[in-house]
Image (tube, rainbow, N blue to C red; front, side):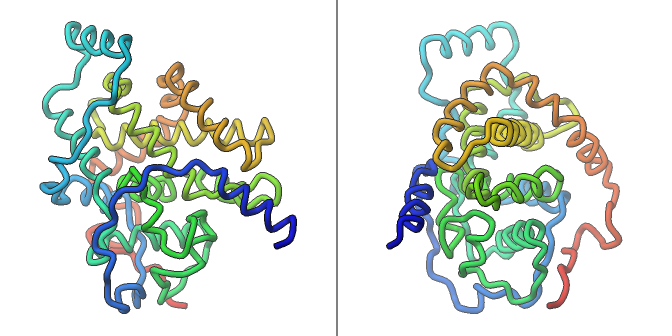
Length: 301
């Protein structure tokens, strides 16, 4: 193996890997790997799916709270005493998020496939029929191998759903994706997104987002605002400080520290755009020409 090839392997190995969760339902029929009709997922469909997907099996597995330090335990008691803890309806929404984060990819659930295809097509601009569920094309958008489902580690379907929302709702996603392909500053885009989702989950477990949810949004929408802000900060640091893939671990470590001190700032910077779109969604306004209750066809080859 050449020196340049060795360097690429080492750079890839330096990417922070999340704990692997059990991926059930590994066996699937060949026809499930190929979609004859691919469809974009809309924001409204994704919100509806998250609100209604069956999480009965996942709820007993959720980890609601992190291992707290003494200071974090004090903050929790302080929040409870002064009315800063979540009301019961918000706790139910939060627990649904944690449950989805334990949910593995299901080859029988076509919505999961539609999310993957939406992410791939929106980022690459490659609109095709017959896009296979297994193949090297997934490495183009920053998955580590030919099967993207093996990279939903520690974040389950929440990782896929946040990535899908990011690609649908934010122009920043394309700028980040283009940066991930840079000859010098490249990084695995999808894997980085999974890391941002993991950070989002940790901050949510610590109760640091309890005061950030707005009356006109769900906990998932609030968590997406945080995700957007965190990814935006990552983008800023990566560009301004000319980071490369060998710096990934340090960048993520510093990002975690920065976030805890600047949560409100992160969410305000990107929150206005997201809020406007969510308000329109909540009012049931149809953005496109197609009925939002049906998938919008991506198109033919």
